[in-house]
Length: 489
Image (cartoon, rainbow, N blue to C red; front, side):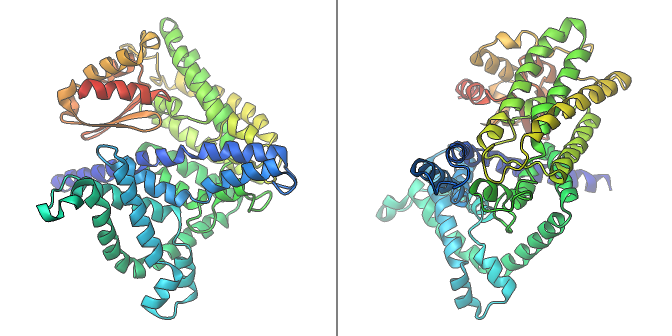
């Protein structure tokens, strides 16, 4: 029995590790959304009533932003394929695009009717929605793996022109053709399940929004929150909360309910949590903790990037993270009940709140900053009470805590050097990548990793699953990752 559970844990670890890789690859296409937010936000500010109908400049900006939002499926296909490619080559993106075009052509309503005959209403709806972000992600996965598999293949001399990177999109087209056959039968069933799930939760109204916020936070440690987000935020089953909000195609007072409640948490709640961790740190370590938490709090408030704060207590105090998830659900419920609605293209920070303030669907948005203050107070006193009463070892409280000592003064190169040493040296690194806030690595021997040394060099969290390791660095991770890659190569 123990052997069975051990193998099960290994399989689950591999599944979670793979899903996290996909989640990481989603960061590139998601990073395009702020461009759309800026264009649409400024367009709304210029002409909030006519939404571009009464201003040429506003119409120009709104249409430019919509060009990005309306084609997120293709952007996902390109970005995921690129993110999964081992050498980050643009040919992988071409493979992802090829897969997407083959899928959406062969599984369109007209083509499906030719293959299957008369379609039922549910089948017609499913194939009519085939151009969605989920298919974009699947296309990117296929394109990325096809690139990794075939980009180094050398064909016989007569076919040498089609060798290597040129072979990847060719093989992708054949693979996608074959996979389209079972999808003709599987997609309508899977789509029906998604519709039922989304309909059930959206039918719960404000309570459903609260459940969404709760599960979204709880899934973050596993990198699976992207799957939940894609159902409610994008046009997978028709909810499309982000797309409808930014395009002004939703319902005032309803559209935005799966986004608005995040603003009080990211602009207030987590600031209170960071302040509580600063005040409960040991006096001699309080300055170091404050330097990290202030920077992380500012990122959360301004841009909505929360991982540097969340990972600071996620693993050392899971109870605090559960409390955080519950409070997020409560905030989502309150915002949806009032209703106080706003949305975002990147995350629920001050930038997005200001940009969307004159969006026609931003209803009572000014209440959200007030809720942020309230949640900041609640988080501060609740976190401080739990940390002190339960003696939770948050940063700066452990006896052997070397947290961030001197790390604030380190250059990106120096931090990368210390990270590499703490990870067991370059011989221990088998794969290296990064997402928006984390180094994502695969190591030969996880026992060589020194968690304390990583934190001393500025990491706010370390996540390990077998040989997969994530080091939470913060929004400056790209520059540290660049130096890190130079060191190991």
